[in-house]
Length: 181
Image (cartoon, rainbow, N blue to C red; front, side, top):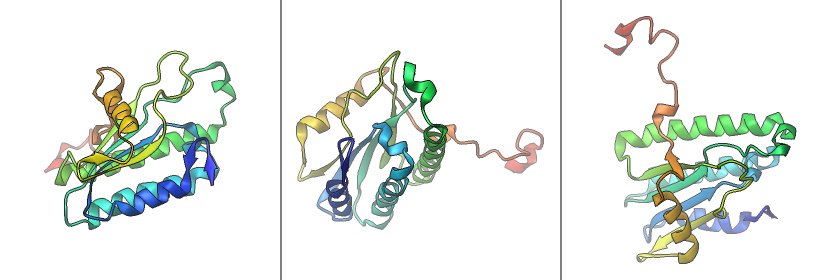
């Protein structure tokens, strides 16, 4: 199945390779709004699960750099966007924040999530969705990987997704500071 430039078979093949020790890094870009459509929920969850599983099962270090949207586009047709897309966006960011918190306790560098900021009337991301793997110091598609990595390295184009984006305080955190003791 290929939809909106997302070759599901290729994604699955590359995600499966994450569990091999010859892959030392992965670059995952998921900025197309197709990821937020209801029919893509299962595959989006499959990708999340594959990345978490690879991180947890491997005996050697795997560095994952992931790029997702920071915000949904503000375009004239944004008003007609289904509410389910906005809900999926919020829920996904919540889960990604929780994953960031888990990995921050072990090694904050192994799983970095960057949020691509869409500006003004930008309707789509300037980088294509991809899952690129590094084997023997080389990316599966070097030009695409470099484009995405240069985007992350350009000041003001992304912001990190961290546990700070997740409210772990609970209902009594502000009222009763003893919960921290």
